[in-house]
Amino acid sequence: MISYEEAGRLLGLAAARDQRIVGDADILAWHSDLNAAVIAFKDADAALTRFYAVEMAGLEPEARRRVTTPDVISIARKIRAERLANFVYDPPPGDEDPDYLARLRGQIASTADGTSPALTECPALEGGPHPDVVKALAQVGRSTPDVSSENPVTEVRRAGPLGVCCPTCQAAIGRPCKIGGFDEKRPPRQLRTPHAARTRVANGGPAQLESPAEIERRRAASMVKLQELQERETSGE
Image (cartoon, rainbow, N blue to C red; front, top):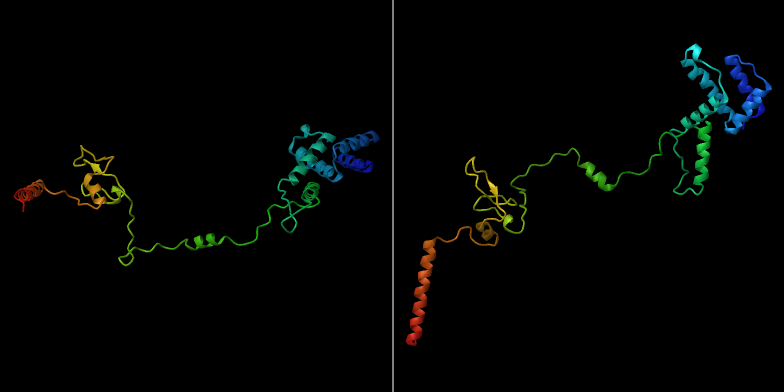
């Protein structure tokens, strides 16, 4: 709280700047206004200096005026807010703070009053990075070794027809079969189902079926063999 004598000192400082005449009524009015706004003498003195040294100094002489209690109150509150702009709570040592709220309020009050400067950075956490992070960072900047015949890359296999190359359209592993692409007017088109030869190879069968002549030869041989068996059964052999 501002005392009656401190209010008189403030008005005396104002009169030294703007040559006003100060009376008992002026001191009483300033004393009542500043205490009603809960403005301390230190903040009011700083506000008075800023009013004349900064705000009025930037105006033309004809635009300047005398300071009033609303000016002092407004500037004093702005000064307190500026002191808290970079405020960071300073916790006590350890992980627990049973008096956190009281400690926080005390730090805010002392910082706003200008008694103690506000911290601009949070205390750094102690301890190194996680071991996995250290291991990953150790690989940064290292070149990738070339693949040689002594260390071949294991081929990735997958189930189904797409796990093998297509013998019909030469589609690579994992890529769908295609048709067309023999000229610019017929671009290749992907097939929804793989070629039959690719399916046979994936199932362990041959890529190419036997020729029609070979199939007919095998059929004729089977008929001859069947006829011989029937004749034996008829003759009772």
